[in-house]
Image (spheres, helix red, strand yellow):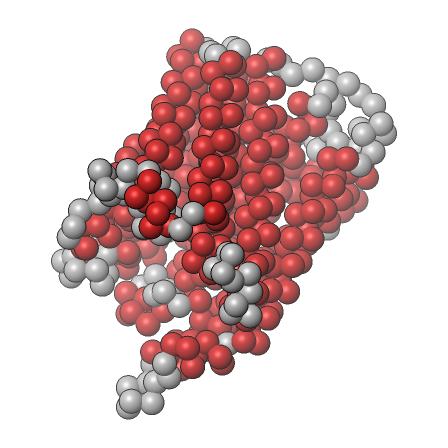
Amino acid sequence: MTTTTLKFKSQSVSRLYFIGALALFLGQIVFGVALGLQYLIGDLLFPFIPFNIARMVHTNLLIVWLLMGFMGSAYFLVPEEAETELYSPKLAVILFWTFLVAGALTILGYLLVPYATLAQATGNDLLATMGREFLEQPLPTKLGIVVVALGFLFNLSMTVLKGRKTAISLVLLMGLWGLALMFLFSFVNPSNLVRDKMYWWFVVHLWVEGTWELILGALLAYLLVKTTGVDREVIDKWLYLIITFALVTGILGTGHHFYFIGLPGYWQWVGSVFSALEPIPFFMMTLFAFNMVQRRKREHPNQAAVLWTVGCAVMGFLGAGLWGFIHTLSPVNYYTHGTQVTAAHGHLAFYGAYVMVVIAMISYAMPLLRGRQAAPQRAQNAEMWSFWLMTLGMGVMVLALTGAGILQVWLQRIPTDGSAMGFMQTQDQLRFFYWLRVAGGVGFLVGLLTYLSSFFIGQHEPDATVPNLARA
């Protein structure tokens, strides 16, 4: 085994965040499989965990573990980019436990207390912020998120200020500060429904199709610098180009959520045009990743991390780009909005763009955090199998949801002669696709368990060289 040491001791705080993120990721997928079964067995787990609570837990765990993954990635990346120790490792550890405990208590609150009672007990009468999709967190949790985010950004910003400034660290900081600022709109809950939905999309859209894309671009650039050895100047130019397109199309592309909520009609044109351009930065990320790998100056021993990195660029384009484009134009969105087509796009976009980049960072960083250049070959083989299992499982889910969505539109929304089916009648016709979705979800869960198992395989074996599966 070839031993190695971290360049900066404070990078080790990222291990806590990575472990916490993976544990919450596992919980999210377990609840996801349960939700898929509840579509088919309506009273499954009722009344203990009804569908609305299971869905809330599923989506909230997704948000929390991705944020935790971003934070861990930043704590690993920034000291190395800034060429200095983290400003305050102790603050990073305190914020981790604060975030984890607050998140766990919130999830337990969802599961053990009726939501209306939880709202009343946590001060929702003083400042009403609860009850909106993805932003269901009680007021104390939202305030805690703000405190954790400010402490986290203070820590990172001070580290960058006292050290080297690189394009990667500055773009990452811009994305993280934007993420925190956009979250403040979650405290704005006007009585006017149109304004409410507009501000809600300021959080949800400008996160996942705005600031998160900057974080994604910075993490991808860092991984490609480390695994390919390509000159940083080349990668920086690609990064600036990608984030420019991401910001222009992402900000104005928010208009595709404004089509039918009461805002002026010009948003149908603005939203359609700029949303149609949103696949461009993701396609550029795909070209970027493949171009850098082809121009690599060395064969990195951690081929599992390379596979996740390139896979992220490809699947991000498919999920956020292609599947987003499928129903982004307003005449199409008129029929598909809120159907299973939306669910197909959402699942593949989150997995391809954000889940995979966090896993790529964990796969790259964890061997270094454990004092070795790369995981043993058997462990990397397991990781690569997990990549294919999770990706194929997600592919089955997305194709099943796409098929369900197309049939849903056809049966429920297209007919104009009074023959359209009701919602529940339509759902009965989609059961075949829902069973396929469950099968894909189970496959994804098996892939995730395989990935987790890789951390316990062959820890006393020599470091891996270049596993054959990486060339598949």
